[in-house]
Image (cartoon, rainbow, N blue to C red):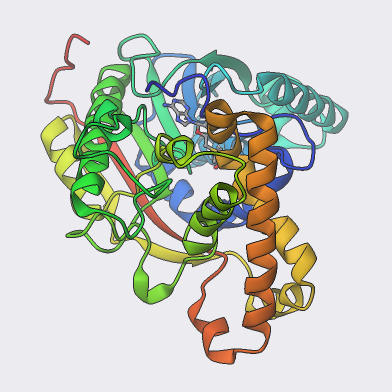
Length: 407
Ligand SMILES: C[S@@+](CC[C@H](N)C(=O)[O-])C[C@H]1O[C@@H](n2cnc3c(N)ncnc32)[C@H](O)[C@@H]1O
């Protein structure tokens, strides 16, 4: 099943929209700024113009515009620094930022946010450095709809590429997993977490193929010395892909037993058949560092600037979590809207809006019960890392030695 049209996040700015619910990712991305700044420092300053930057998996813009502004600022700083060091004025290049996502993405939302950004920048012009580059905003922008697992840009045209919280989404679910007669039919689950290792390995294989395609495509598009910076959901347990989240950390609440049990509730209540659930697979795979490293080496076009073991990023301070748990209903509403903002479109494509609403009603009920039980269980509160993501950060520099494939 190809997912290109149905995997995007919920658009607009409504209750389940990524515009609203991407707030947790925003908090994790903010902490990435030192790594992003370092990645910009590693980029060879281009001689050709315009300087071309792209975001692969920009979604509806909420977070993307913010980190793109930061990256552009870091690039401007590099040129200003180069001036100071050289004692003469280096020409500030014009910059083009390409925002790319799948065709089903709500680009209208992004365009509107960019327009208000440009207006704000214009209002400020004269008092900020941005005015030096002579436009309302510091960069020109373009939108592109397509899959980042394919070639999307001309050869050797990109200087800096970023992708955050996107590369764990798969391009497709292997057909064997949804074929009832196949031994790999993913029966009794909507995902692979804690499930059959053989089925998890089938996910792994697809996901590795996807990463190969991502790297090969970028290797063709990047200029030598260009940088790819990526940050995505990952896992600690390299050996066992079914351990998509670290069992010891109990990151179970968002996609673990409560979510699977909500599907079971839906079946028990006669809303959907088991087959409807079993033929749905959440198109997400958390790679290990070892898997990522192997793909980079296989591609051969990039030098690793930064690649460390996955880190657990907690985006909700403990006192804030305790405050949230005091209000199980709003806790459940928030967490289920967050999960829906990301998984909702693919679930709706599988079983329609009504059944998806019903699923999330049951999920909320489960979360509410979970919050209530956590309130009276201090040990479990500590074990359940509710708002913790395991994330892998990688920065790669396009090397000068390998030639791009003719993809
Ligand atoms: C969780 S959002 C991340 C948005 C933003 N980068 C952030 O960090 O907040 C993931 C985005 O990746 C996009 N995406 C997933 N698979 C993709 C693919 N194959 N090609 C392009 N975009 C993809 C989704 O449509 C979605 O907008």
